[in-house]
Image 1 (cartoon, rainbow, N blue to C red):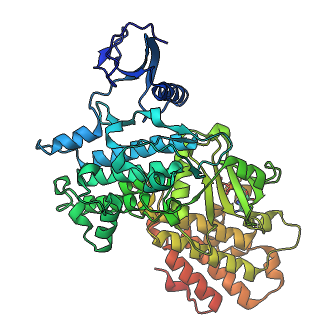
Image 2 (image 1 turned 180 degrees about the horizontal axis):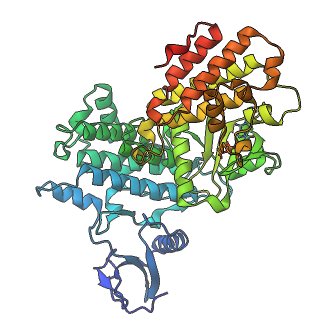
Length: 546
Ligand SMILES: Nc1ncnc2c1ncn2[C@@H]1O[C@H](COP(=O)(O)OP(=O)(O)OP(=O)(O)O)[C@@H](O)[C@H]1O
């Protein structure tokens, strides 16, 4: 609470920029107490901003009461609002570059995703409520029209309200005509802001007649494949294909955000993911491909309060669960202590990659918890027969037969070939590649170790503390010394099936090639798969891998 030492005209909504004693620059927003709704707005904004600080929401430093006025003290953002920037560009020769605009969109998507997570609908998303700081970091302002959904009401539920508020060109038509209030109203308005960003034209200047809305104009241009007519050429898309793709994908995303009925629109988290993808060079904006965002309570119920643990991994614990639709799931919960920035990055990366890839030999990812939820979880299809490790090293139910092992090797190789050929590299941090820490050939090495494990039934970790250190080194040495028998599970020799022994020898030879150093000597996963299939068919010759 500030001592009231400001003076201001009650009719001003915003007074001029001022400075606090500690040097912080501020703006003061005045609410006239005579008007009950304004006071209500004042309470709304103070309550929300006090409890929900976010880097992309204008900070509130305090409030004060002054005669019949209530005053709100905000941080001052020196670059003004987005609308006046776009407006003034018409007369100036300079424009905000496309990448700055994309960052502005990402910042605002971030703030809305955050508000929606807490059940708050902004209800007045527009470019004049987007303020820019000295570095053009964007912050959402004017939360005084926002509404908090009652506790316990699902965030995506739709409510009917008689109280229609908002700004004309930005307002969701379903809210306007039917009073359908939900977080999807903000998604619509955000779509309008995206249109302003790629066209440099304010929403009020888009619509020329009563029949047309911004959404119908955009839709028609997309349908007629004349979308480029809406893009601002000053942003450089004509000479730069990458910018053109980014701008087109953003326009397609805006189109999705403005779809009716509102159920067809993505939620803000999906929008944010699409924008992040566009920035990284992924242009997939189809929201139907987006992962389901599960709520913690839903997963708590599915797992009966996480009572059945399936196992623990490096990042967290995996629990068994059953969703309401009957699907069995394995839920990976990241350890609290491992929830560093790095883990969250890992979490987002795993979802971004797996969410787009579907293959019968890859475990499907059904969804995840929201990035704002403080418990990070991934929801996978449940694989009832457990891990290969369990069957090779922990099972008391007899040895896994050789033909099953060969099939497992082929199916795993098929999944790896799919991953390596699907262009997932485009989604992976290029640093990993450039630093040489990860490459397709690292998977080939690891797969070689799995092949040795399948042949020998030896746990790779059992080799620790011996002269050989790793199973791969042990197996390589034995093969070079022509002591292959030491690497093959003794139970396979018992049957003395000549055909099987030939196959095992060929697989051992292949595994040897997979673990060679330097990595350039290793075959590709495609060559490995072809060889394994040849071995199964009996058509493989030793000298086929070069
Ligand atoms: N989809 C699934 N279906 C059934 N069980 C699973 C599933 N996913 C994981 N599990 C079980 O949970 C255990 C831990 O899995 P998790 O993926 O966290 O770690 P990991 O693969 O063992 O190790 P890392 O963290 O190094 O990848 C697995 O060993 C397995 O027993």
